[in-house]
Image (cartoon, rainbow, N blue to C red):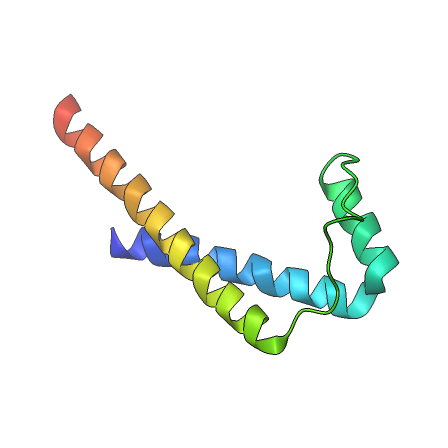
Length: 87
């Protein structure tokens, strides 16, 4: 259960870092275009904020890791509980 939680958390943190890299390299217009394409044309221009303080980004990646770990732990727990029921 701990390994799957870590895998989910680490994957979420990597996606968060990828988002940071896109924002740093593509600028506002490129970031909006990227996420509009990723989200099947949903207009993200009104919700993308480019002036994110470093402390907010740090807490965001930590929170993303924790939420991912909790999701992974829940998936593992439900999976393990179902295996015991099926046997």
